Image (cartoon, rainbow, N blue to C red):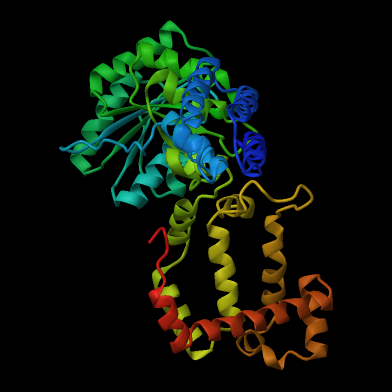
Length: 446
């Protein structure tokens, strides 16, 4: 995952600082040297690194830091704040038009994932803002580009406007906006053509589309895997076309992450979304403060809460609370909870957002989504009667369930034991006394 190596190195530097009772200017200088090397290895722009180190060093060498009781923590706080500012400071949102439809034009080089990202963006806006987006197929050159957009659009139940691959993209864009006005679609998301490199023909066509439909937002899609090239591409597109924001794709891959830390500073344009997976729901709004926390191993509680709220159904949550209160939570309910957890995304990604855990798992600990498949298979091998009343599962039933799930009887025993422990804990938490205690608690993110 992007930033994994950078995060480990930065956390290693700060662990040394936290171990010191007092921190001297020499300690700060050595720490900043290691931070600088870590950033450069992560493919962060050299000029950006130089400015970042200078700013952090100046603040870290202040008397209020060096003379404090927790200088290591103070320096981490400074680095966290500077990283946040480096990536934009605050979340940059889509600027919707006061008079619909809002026109959003996606541009970028071929291979950056523009077509899939167009659908992901449409799906995200539809879900978050309850709008009726329209996807527009303006890439008439790449084979099957129009068909690809139609397929991903249908999967999200979002209409796609197309006039085939023989029409001029400028005409298609104009007709699409007129169609949106007539049918009440908003926003209009235009998937434009890309090239393997920036050329005059490409920029001329994009400029003509821009002139014709006057988009509210021009978003550049860049592949985070390309490192510094992503920054160079962003700079060129911004100079020639004038972009309003950036979408970084493939940030879940082996990208070193330097582009995310450089592109905002170099172009002055904000990162608005990041692609964190191949599924159509794997597009996240970009929060600089949350990303900085992830890099420094502090977790990302707010994004974890967002994912949980998206995944968990309110009616099911209310029903679950009632079952906890009456101690009627059964294996059928447990199966539903597993399904909800799977909706939140890959386990490794979810765990990386937990404070105190993210980025600090031992090397020999492997997070495998298949770990959720085993209990699911065991429960699905049970009869409805066994799921609702696990106490009837005797030795012969366990053998049958194990054979049906392709596991050992010990695995069935382990699941049933875990379930009993969970149910006991739920009963404890649902008691009036515990509810009263919980009601008085105040969480930092509440």
